[in-house]
Length: 269
Image: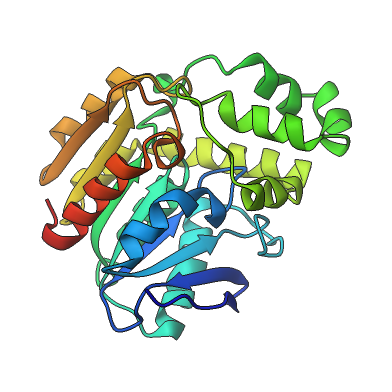
């Protein structure tokens, strides 16, 4: 397995793993995370694919951007992939990263050959009441104050609060989360909500001619797990639910998640 240093392309930090001549698999993280959140599944994927982990603007090692509008972020990612000369690619998005992936497929059907969505809520009505720790960290008036004094332990608890299984939160993910600004995070959440409020993800996918894999934890505390079946109506879509898994399948069930992604990237099914 070849491992390559990260690079910045169109203001986005990207880390390459696996052979460059292999088919490309692009991994997009969710809000408040980074490409490091994919770490546990990368070794299995990079044995057969050129894996690109993206840090979205304002996350990880990518600088902030003037706008966090979902279509604009997708357009930046498209420009970066164009500069790298990559197409078609399989794109996998975790949580709101699935919205960036969907918007990318909407804008550039020539670029996206297949699409995997992991723990991506289909519409606003599927959102569950959030864990208390996350509400305290995110919402005013305490959020802006606590954000500045977050400890590593608090950051780890923030990740595990949406998990159903015990997980080891990677150190590089903790470091990346620490670098995300409060205003950036709040703006990203608002723009993500606007994207799925304007039109649900299943409705957007129905208008596309692309194979789709949907992976949902059956014990996701962030999105109603039964909402995964809203994707059943989308043509050429396969829905997989992982028992006892919460919102972070890549951390909670990396082997099962990796196997699903490998099979889908190889066959589009």
